[in-house]
Image (cartoon, rainbow, N blue to C red):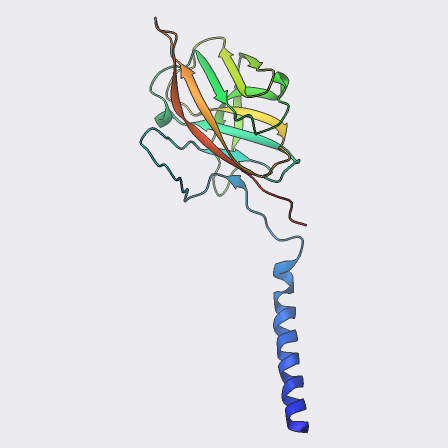
Length: 193
């Protein structure tokens, strides 16, 4: 019987050692992933009519203040932009104020730097009453060739989930029609208590 007790005690000490070794990984100060679009994205109805756009968020948890950087790279648009509309689903229940929205020339981040606004583009911003559309009218058409983006400083919604924001742009010309540029697939995470 004493041999079995000794073996059980040794096993318990071994497991305690393993648990102690894992403790730093479970600490509350562990690194968190940034709110960027994922490398792999699954869609039920994957058609050629959907174009994925790059974005960055400073916080993906619900009800947290977050800065959104919705980017349009040079490859995402072929013409200058006279008007840019960001379509937001009605289920993304937030209050967006025009003063918290900017159109910028963007510096795309990576491993060593963060995504940020390099230069603000003078524009008039209008937000629909139900915050389902943000319309941006630059003072002069925004030329192609540079990465631009929409900067939003808002509180994330209460409901966690995935939300598809759509980018529509109107090019200078005789026909005042907005064309689809692509979509940002935003994910809001539940709290991690």
